[in-house]
Length: 139
Length: 246
Image (tube, rainbow over all chains, first blue to last red; front, side, top):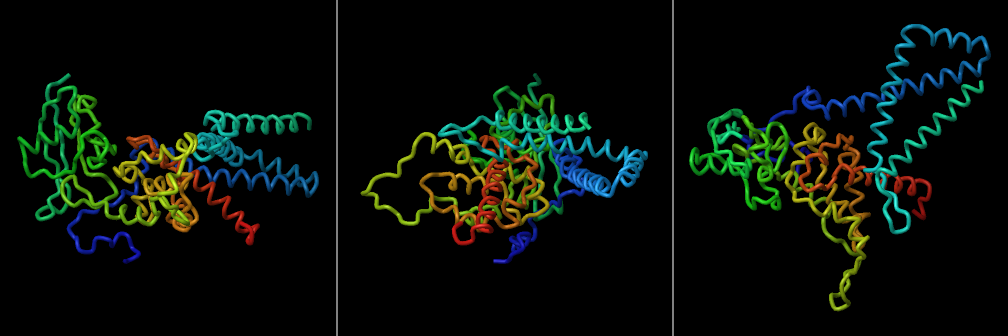
């Protein structure tokens, strides 16, 4: 058997194969939302990179940290971080929405309802955010 | 409610057409008629050359799946009145080669289905005389939702990944593999792992989630795939860290 699935009907050349449009993801809200979720990964990567740059600046001393703060206050970095924040939040929410489908939790013989699994993630998120806020406020 | 509604039916006659054309027919629209009744009316009274598949008319056989106003639907469970005043556009399922009119070829799925060994696999078959394999209600509940699949192919038609990459094993085949993986009587999980863990297996899925939304039997193939991703990841980690004892 050939490994190319498109060639699985070589003796039926008149069967109609309709190609998928390049813009298939604009045809339906759920497809568009999916593409946005996938695209949000780039902003997650940016957030990680920004955090690493912050850690490096802190590690190099106060002069470097001040320079980082000045750079962060420039218009394009500020704009980028606002957009990144929205996409990262969108990424997190859509990820948590998907969790009950991926993670089936049992306690003894009983299955934990999906809304509790999802709720647990939101509680953990809120707790982590509270710790970060406390650290920032304390500083 | 109107007493008639227009159906725009896709036609593809390979002996004369190079692409899809649409025929328009007015059909009666009583409140209990489904799209399949409309197609049967066309076939019986207006145009006997229209070709489509159907059998049970009650959402069991899975053969009357078509694209209705852009959405994959079982036409035996899609009421004409819900689309009033119309028109209703009826097309073949997407992502499959069209043989004629509304009939698609699902041979690709059938070949993939066999690869995931969708049956009970036992290391050693116990003789019937030794009794049945017993299950608790909880064990039954684990796999029962996935056993409801009727192979209607709506999930494949809704999946853009399958449309873009036909090598992807696809939602129904993976859900059916999970149906047996989660069955307490089955011992074939390792055998299925080899197929499901391929790039074209579970990792091909990027969780669009449309397969679950369109499933007429509430099977949740997207959930089955995500659950299996977790299983496969854990198994890979075990194999990496405990190569002898995994």
